[in-house]
Length: 202
Ligand code: ADP
Ligand code: 5GP
Image (cartoon, rainbow, N blue to C red):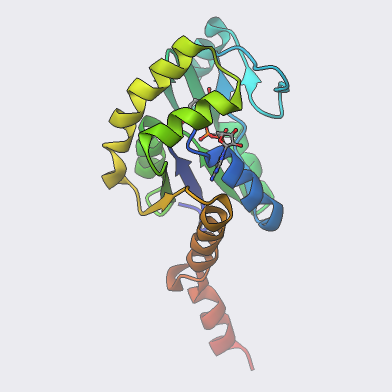
């Protein structure tokens, strides 16, 4: 534990977590987003080093062996993981990390950083989720079907999370995520030092 607020944001693929986190980061400079490593191929428009670090399986497995990942998981047939270096960078710049990861990764981060705040984003319905995956236009049909099959299993783990946001209206969902971040930084455990400093000052 390092005293910083770390946020975990998880959802089935297509529920909207990437869109919501992008909006959060625009107004919360005290966070850095973790740029994950993945063995999946880049989508059109995705940039290596901005959206993900795209690696082949051999390099990914080397990172596991060398202990370079603070969590990793196999998701929808590809490997995804967060670099230790990203978390170190956040600490050095006195910022928290927003982990945009799957349920298995969320469990690992929660075990390593118990005071990390975990948010699960629910789609309003399965139909809407499928529609969003289709409208995004980034995956072929068989990948959409695979992600829909995995979605139910992911939602079944909602009990691991501190907060649930239903992403129906996007702005409302973003406001809730910002509200969670704002309330969490003001928790007594994170502000106690300020009270103590005041008590000790003249
Ligand atoms: P995830 O990161 O969870 O896979 P994305 O953020 O990529 O999901 O969102 C999936 C698609 O749904 C994107 O095309 C995004 O623009 C759209 N989207 C996200 N939230 C909403 C919403 N509340 N209403 C309508 N479309 C949305
Ligand atoms: P996508 O292929 O749509 O970018 O991501 C698929 C899923 O992989 C996401 O929904 C997210 O849950 C998960 N994911 C992305 N990065 C990571 C990571 O670094 N670690 C883990 N455990 N999961 C990740």
